[in-house]
Length: 246
Length: 303
Image (tube, rainbow over the protein chains, first blue to last red):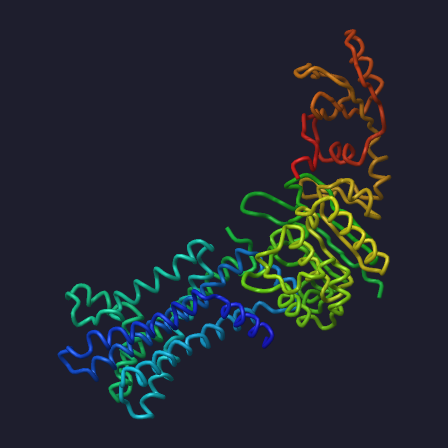
């Protein structure tokens, strides 16, 4: 299991695109938004810089969790999952490793964006709040690991490749990670409330403000994760991971 | 241990409305080298996949005396699959290392690399491999656990002539060392040259089973070949079971060579390059796997 885990990590680590979109880009956005718009923000620089940082932590972690797990579709298309099936590696191990890799890879985005926020943008939070913020967003990213697995199992290689970008962008845009939902028209705000990305960022905003996460956000995320997980399991039952692509 | 390497009875696989494998029985003692022959869609691949537990099936499958899934988990089976492949964004050495670690006992890396002819490829990214190199790496994966049973589904399809020869030399070495080798192939010359036993599959059933010589002898037919103008009418000749054209050369498989020749010569036509000979394995398989007289392209010509 640990051999497969390290093997998978090394493979993702070779993917420059993955590192750019999940770590470098969110970190740059954090810097850019705070430096360009922060000084003129209505609610003061500190609040604006903190809100931007939390949104970008959510954006980066979401992209990492989705990107790492959707890749299972590529391993099906190449025939690798089928090949693994005729080695002693149990299919269950393959799935567990896939989940663990997705969970672990959200951490760099969270930590790097938090470091940029704290050290470069000067966001000031109590030490306990910093730790709680990273921990809560790390745990909450499970919903996107489940969603990524579902998409990776359900979609063919080409569709999965596009889904990484499209799903991430739509969830970020409509979930208020790039533009706060407060400036959305009412209809669009209702859409945001139906997306896991909104509740995920909400989790972070509460913790950054020194409050415990709102139960509604926690429940919504658990609901989304359970739904995606159940659907992924159903898809895998209908068409096993080692079945031929197409 | 006396259990056969492979013991399959009543194996049936259905895809939607079609029956790909239809109550197939096959028993392969340890140490044998067996070729599964037959045209596309005969059920060879499906049989291999079902034996490995990759497709849902009915019937009984025992691999070295136990259920297939158990044998795979114990590292007793190595397989090259038609739809198997290598992972992207990885180096050959990393893939081999991972697979070798998964087996309870593994083939020492240096020896495995030499045996499968992948020296110098270990640091190569998987994406940079040629078709033949890829097949050799897949063979190394199949052999990584030094399995007593090897199942190979069209193993040489991406190899050139040189690669094929090297591949079968490796297989002969393994077979001499006691490994049971079962391979599905289109290349009848491979079956003829390598296999102790040939199992001909058609319509999801075994239609002939024996040594290559026995299978050839079992179809008592002969081949009549000659050069003919394109479009020459060859319908209605007595005894003819199959007509194959290779350019201007016509090959007739016939159960009654004498009567076929009489009919051919009766209308006074010329037969330049006339040859009459006993059936080759290819013709034997063609005869066995086609119920009615047909005009067919030679098996394996599409590869």
